[in-house]
Every structure is written in C-alpha cells, then in structure tokens.
Image (tube, rainbow, N blue to C red; front, top):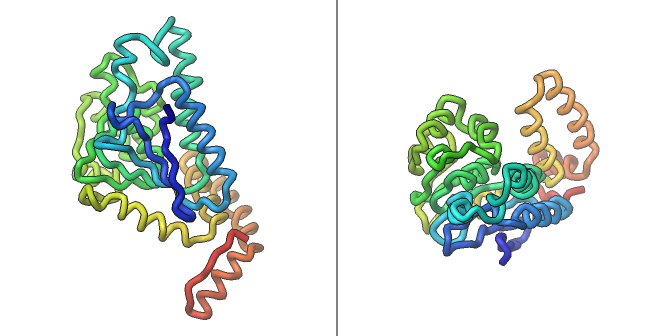
Length: 265
C-alpha cells in the first residue's frame, strides 16, 4: 500500500503519511523509492510552489516500525551488513529525497512525531504543531542510535544542548515546549492545524517560484558554507533574478501600489 497520499490544491501540494492504523510508521521496504518518486515529480513541477507534509489519523509519525524491529523483518532484518544497506538504500533514500525538495516545505504536525518521525518533521523548512503534537528522539530507549542522521538534523533546529538532552534522555516534549525551544513556529488547536498550514502556504505561494526555490537553496547552503561563500552564491543568484520578468513585475507592483502577480518567468 502506498505510504504517501498526494492532494493538489492549486500551487500547494499536500503530502499525507497514510498508515493511520499504526500511527504512520516509516521505513518499510519501498518507502525510500516512493519518497524519491514523489520528490522528483514535485521538483520538476514549476506549478508547485509549496508542500505541506502531515500525517493521517492521530499521529504525524511514530517513527520506525517497532514490530518489524522485534521480528527482524524488512529494513531491520538480516545480517549487520544487510541492515546497514537497508538504512542506506531505504530510510536514508527517503530522508535525502525530503531534504532535496526544492520548494518550501511546511510540516503540519498533527500528533506524535517520534524518532524517525521527529527527524522527518525537522527536515521541513517550517513546522506548525497541533496542541496534540509531541516530539521525541527515543532511539536510545530502544537500544539503538539515531540511524537517520538525526544527530545532524536536530542540533540545527534547536541547538546542541537541547538536542543532546532529548537524545540522551529519550524524553518526549509537548507542543508548548517544542514552541519554546524553537522546534515549531506556532501551536494551534487541532481542528485549526490544516487551515493554518494552508493559509501560510497560500501566502508563500504568492511569491515568485524561482526566487522561492533559490532562497531555499541559499538557506541550506548557508548552514554549511563560510560567509564569503554565501555572499558569492548570493551575488551570482541575485544577478539571475534581476533579469527575470517576475523581478520586473515585483518592482512595477510596488511602484504602482498594487499586488504583484508572479508567473515564474
């Protein structure tokens, strides 16, 4: 059964993790390939300007499949080299695809986001949480380590000290604490979550699509490069943007005191 349900609402694509009966576990065989197919399609589609990622039912994602871990099946079965390859060729494939999305991604976290599920949420550019959301990276409580690159992801979101606290204790924090720690931008009532996400996505989607994608790329590059390199990337990218019809439209709209209409040109 497909993991991801896709709904298109104009320039916004909604991706729903849909294994609601089991709290949307991730990492089943084929999940990586499915994420790659979906991400590649979105990246090729210039009509898509924003993605909303959420979960079906009462959870965003409870993380890896605990029963598969117990039974040593699927990604978690076989010899040590086989399990290692399972992470590289499936779970890591899924995460690389999500990280590689070129459009802004909003995670609408409707419920628990635990382990792998928390790290998937943290790969989004923006996170909005329901009051029912909970966050934790509970790998050590299972006698394993963050095998999904979470030790790289989480410190970039909430800082090293708080990330270490969550990893070392296995604690699960509520939505209010997540907001206080900067893990999410805002917390809303459960029945308002998708409306809030759609409203934010709608505002983002009004902006020029090429500039959106390039700005996301510069934000990502800025986490890993020197300031001098960031300036050089900005100069080269900005030069391209100055030649676009969308830039001319933005300038004209500001001078004429009207709303701009960006066409990706």
